[in-house]
Length: 117
Image (tube, rainbow, N blue to C red):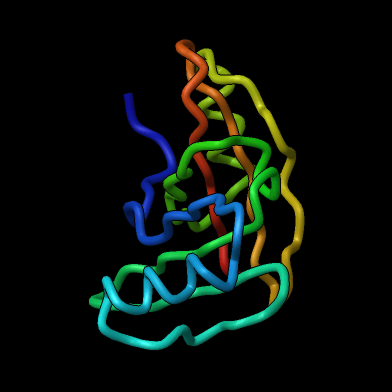
C-alpha cells in the first residue's frame, strides 16, 4: 500500500499541569531555553526535534502526542481514516500557517498530524 509519505515524527506535545514549573524541568533536561514561551504554549527546538508543553487538556489527552509531519494533511487524513483510524480533532490552523489534527488508532492511541504551509 502506498500513499502520501510522512516526514517522520518531529514534534511531541506534552500536557502539563503547571506550565511554568514544567518549563524549568524541560529546560534543565534539554540544556536550552525555550524558543517559544507564552501562557498557553512553551516550545523547545533541539537536534531537529520540537518538544512542546501545553496546559493539561489543551490537546484532549493526558498523555504526550507525537505529531507526524506531512505535506498534505487532508490526503493523509483520508488515508488513515480509510485504514480504520478515527478523527479526534479535525485540522485547525494554530498560527503561522501550521495545521494540526489528531486521530485515534483502533486501540484508542492518539496520533497527531502536522502540516506547515
